[in-house]
Image (tube, rainbow, N blue to C red; front, side, top):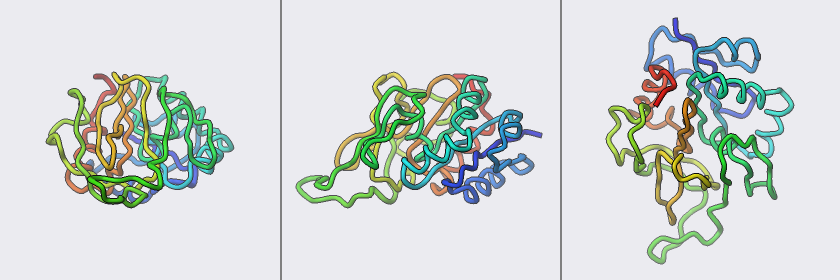
Length: 214
C-alpha cells in the first residue's frame, strides 16, 4: 500500500489535505505526523502550511521539520509543498519584517503591496479566490489538467523564483507571479489543491501516482 506523510507542525490545513488524498486514491495510507520515522518511511511527503511565515518556520525548526524536509527532498521521493509550505522552501520572506526560510529554492517571497491595482482599480489583498494558472513546461503533475485551469488561492505574499527554469506555473493578480515550482522530485504550489475542485484533486492524484521523475 502506498503511503504519504502530511507533515504536521501545527500550521497546516491538515484535515482537508488528508481527506482530499483519501478521496482521490482510496486505500492510500495518509500519515498526518511530524514523527521523523513515519515521515522518513513514507513513499511521498507533503509540506502544507497556512498562517504567518515567521510562526511556520519557527515551528518547523523547533520540531525538526526542516531536517525532515531536507531528508525527503534529498531522498528522491516525491515531495509537494502547498501554500506557505511552498513559501517556506524559498530563501527569504518579506513577511513579519523579514524571515529566513529553508532555502531549497533560490528566490524570495514578496508582499503584493497596499496599492495593488489592475486597470486603474485597486485590488484587495490578500489575493483570495479562484484564479487561472498558466502552465510552463510539461510536468507529470499537470497531467490531465487543462492549461488555464482555475485554482483556489489565499495569500498576501507571493513567490519570485531566481532561477526561472524552475517555474512550472504562473498566475496574474495585479502583477504576474510564480505559483508552481519544480525541480527533480520536488514540486511546490501557492494555491490550495485540496480546495480547488476538479483541477486540484487531479493534481493530488497525479502526485500520488508520480515516481518523482520528470
